[in-house]
Image (cartoon, rainbow, N blue to C red; front, side, top):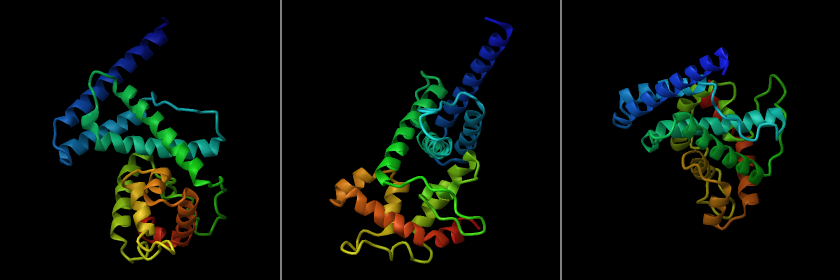
Length: 228
């Protein structure tokens, strides 16, 4: 082992120890307590700076598409760390747990992308209100650490629907299936289109077609309340 390798190993061990101390400390405080939130924010920051994050299936997809898929999976991973820190087992390294979650979420994001039937579209022309390909496009150009709080804002917006527009959009033959309900199932419950399709006995193609058309229509509404 060279001197550089030794220094790298020592740094890695130190980082692992810091991450584990933060995770275990957060577990000792009640959920939603300010102390736990501070520790979790620090933990997320340390994870992002660790240089140990995995990159599942890197090279298998076009760079722009991979970046979008990866960032969405990473955001979901960091959100789960904050919401389910009590499930962390101190017998394992924190980054091993994080990268396990990241790999799992990447597969979920990839499957959602495939099921949606959407093609990869270029960004809208400059100066125009950008169209949304998915709700996760709302987080573009926002640091991943901040996207956790933005996800909470998105969930709150979907639930409150301040102008009552989301609940007005519904399937023609099934008025109880609104855009609001579908969005909450996808964002809050983190369900796949396959799961929702099976529950409603409606094809994935029908659900995705309805959802994506209404999402394009509601783009200005999202921007008014979430990207001011």
